[in-house]
Length: 344
Image 1 (tube, rainbow, N blue to C red):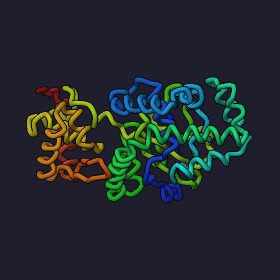
Image 2 (image 1 turned 120 degrees about the vertical axis):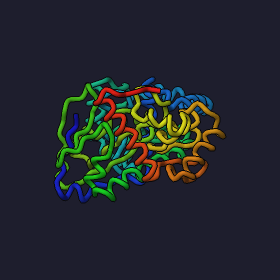
Image 3 (image 1 turned 90 degrees about the vertical axis):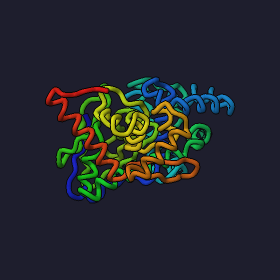
Image 4 (image 1 turned 45 degrees about the vertical axis):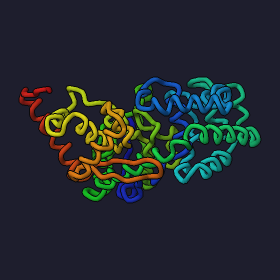
C-alpha cells in the first residue's frame, strides 16, 4: 500500500491533469504488450499495435531497446516518465533529454540490480545515445498511441467530468474520496493500492500538492515515482472493466435488466466510466447500430449524455443516470444482507 499524506496546502494544490501524459501512456502501453492481464479490454488496440509496429519496422527496436527499459515489474526508471510529461509529448521528451547524467546512471543501475538492464543502457547518460533513444520513443508513440488519441482524450474527459462532480459536491476531499476501489480517503491520508511485490511506503507531500493523471493504458494499481523527492504525481487507471465487460449474475446492477432490458442495462453501466458506441456494442454483444439506438433511448430518457470528441462519440452518465445506477447497487447490497438476492 502507498499512503499519501496531505496537509491543507497539499489539498489546495492538488489537481487533475487535463490530458493524458504521453510518455506514461507509452510506458503503460508497453506493459499491455507484455501482459495478458486485461488484454480483452485492449483487444482491438493490441491487434492494430502489433500490425503497425511490424509494418513500420519497429518490432526489433521494441524488443531490444524499449521493452528492456520498461519491464512490467515493480520498478522502471523514473526519468522515463518525467512529471512535465503532463504538459505534452514535447515537454516530456525535453525533460527526458535534460535529465542529469548522474541521475540516469543511478536509476539505470537500480533497474539492473532489481530486474536487469540491457548492457547498452549504461550509455544513456550520453546525450547522443539519449537522443537516439528519444527518436525510438517518438516513433513508437506515433505508431501505437497517436492513432487512438481521440478515444484516449474522450475517456480522460469523461473521467474529469466524473471527478468534477465529486469536486463540486465535496471539494478536493470529495474528489479524492470518489477515485475508485483502489483508493481510500482517510483524512488526511489517501491510501492507494500498490503492486503486491512492492513494500508499503509513505509519501509526504509537504505542501507540494499532488497531480492526479488518469491513464488509458494503465491497468490495475496506480503508479507513483519511486523517488519521493520528485514532484508528486499519481497515474491511475480509468478502470475499463466496469464499462467493457457484460453484466454477470453477481453484479449488483443486474436488477436493471428487468427495468431496461439487458442491452440497455449494459449500456448504462458502461456509461458510468465513459464509453464509446463501439465499446457499448462490444460489451452488450450487439451491432454498432443497435448500440447507437440503445444509447439514444437512454439519452432521450435523460440517463446519459453524448458528446463528440474528434472521430469518437462518448457516452457518460447524467446525474439522473448515476442515481439510477447507484440505487440499483444499493438495493442489491441491501438484498444481499437480507439473503434475498434473486438473479434473473
